[in-house]
Length: 329
Image (cartoon, rainbow, N blue to C red; front, top):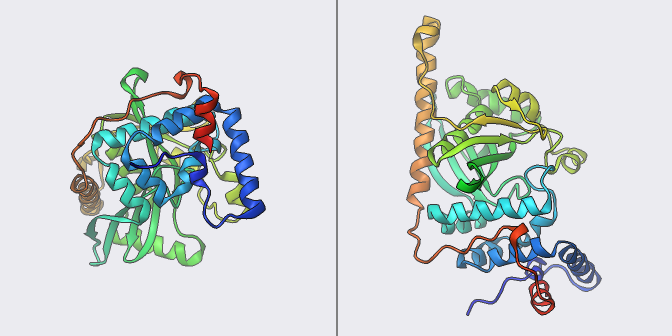
């Protein structure tokens, strides 16, 4: 019988002595303060075997509901509800095992050649390296090097107006060498900017799976904005990129775009000398979209058991003291 997942399962084995005691006490206090949310989250994590695989691969997933996630505007209850909705969607798609595998290491999805013959790969990671910015991380690889990454999470339900997908981070390489690599890749992709491409891929993925819109985190609401900035790891100006893409500013300070099928360029509206390049840019975007679709489809598993019962954090039943103590042990 698989042992139950508790909050203490998220404490790494490297912690010992006073450090472990300190972290345990912090968890106890957080769990006491957010009892209903903690119960709903642990109920999900103990509802399906795939979560045991995820926890083994990345133990910190257990504690993520207590910290800013995706957007700083989300409360703890909203974070739990969003994550519950995401993982129900993942299991419904048959991607549970894929997420567990991607949490252990990148999963290759497909490859397309640039005009120089250089190969560009798409790969999927789960939970990390951007665990506070999205559950899924899609990466564009230039050979063996990560060129661009986008972190995103699915959320919503028919009862809440349909599905959406949220982008919590888009990140490219830093420094002059990184900028040079991006410029070279842009030329090799027929003028297609990698960061625009990553947003387009997520919009298409959302469209393919019934999402109405993609929510784009703003600079101000970025979950790790201050800490990343202090450490020199935040280089993207999200607001500027979203506005360039035509995104609308929301009342919560984030942005949104519709999830839509890749539009066919109207060649009559494009200068004749640029039509060939535009056609090739469209074709390579289609090819990468196909890589993403086929790569995910290749890792789809049939649902062999009932999906876990969905419990929103604000609807979680009152936790009895004995059950609560067991959950946080």
